[in-house]
Image (cartoon, rainbow, N blue to C red):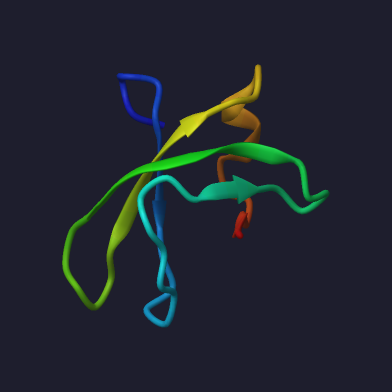
Length: 66
């Protein structure tokens, strides 16, 4: 969790995501949208603007994209 309230996640190397895509939890509830993709090409990170009231509940959890 970043100081600005965004969630920072590490991606699998075989994942192709785009800015603006929705992100879901294991119950297929939308948790936010991708705002930025950054870091090394072989191990990138994404920044997500959360849409849930308790984004800290996602720390250590797997999330899914569209």
